[in-house]
Image (cartoon, rainbow, N blue to C red; front, side):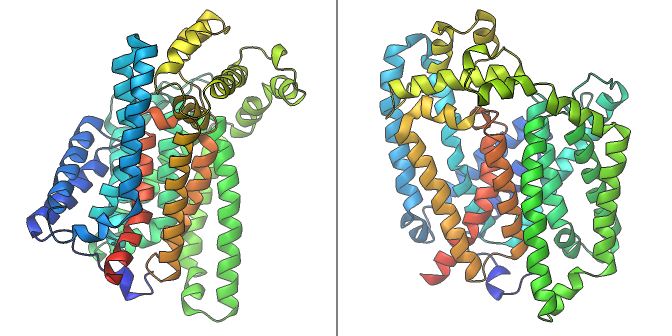
Length: 452
């Protein structure tokens, strides 16, 4: 739990309390409907930006105006404008698409607005995670295209989508819910009134059950790999840190080994095992992992010309083309929608170019669209947020479980973006980046305000 008074209260985000209430309410609306009804969530996001702009007319804006992020944002807008002029002239048929996708990618800066209204409050951070989980539960339980309906029609060859864009996106949402609730379940219940603790516990385990089932039944190998790597690092890091504190006699650490907490982890383990048995996960995973062994072997041997157009084979061929296009325009790229024209003009089979309209890799997507300059701006954002987060954590502003979740999720997120272009989908990459990066950045803003 919080060990420093700095983590228990938020900074005041505006002179008017009604602006603050409006901003926080919009943040909660944004989070609650993300996985339930995206149009309502987007409306909440618009309101959140509106109240943020109002807050910038108050004296609290001084701390933000000294932040490098503001000037990176200005540089990004100017750079986008330059890229648009060239790409719209080169591919005039894609002008509208350029603007739409540029807007989606720019939406990554939404983390600043989320951070502002979180205000470095751990309670608010846990609240938005809880609201995301509630939306996920409602969608899975009551939607005509949700998890329960899909399970009633499930066949061995099925891949669940949970009513979202496709199974890849559904698996990412489910992994987000699983990791966040696994790490925050103790903190969530600590904030709930004693009368409603069992309701909160029941909902947490229901969401964990849904997410585990979805992670298995979406059959997404990238998510399995991401969870395997991030989970292993999480378990090793968590165990070593707790053992170190336990041996030093820390009371807090000893409580982590209590029967109640061990029971909680035991229940999660039972959920995972039960779901794995129900879906015959061993055979399913082995089949998915080994069915393209020959493709991987040819790739490692450098025989790219012999790679067939299978699931992994298509990705490899797309990546190969993307690297070629990047080499042709390495500094500014071709523009955010130019890949569609480039794919059509490429030597790829027509059916591949028509069906797969993006690069299936966020990093290649970024360098094809914006080149080294665009990649450098995003790399700066990532590095700056984590650098400031580590400073805030060392200063006692960020609780350990918040840092643990952010670190675990970041590892998972870096892996899965190597196999899908989540950055260009308005309902996935921008939202997840806004929530996780916003959570970390909010503590830095709070520390910055306190030092001013």
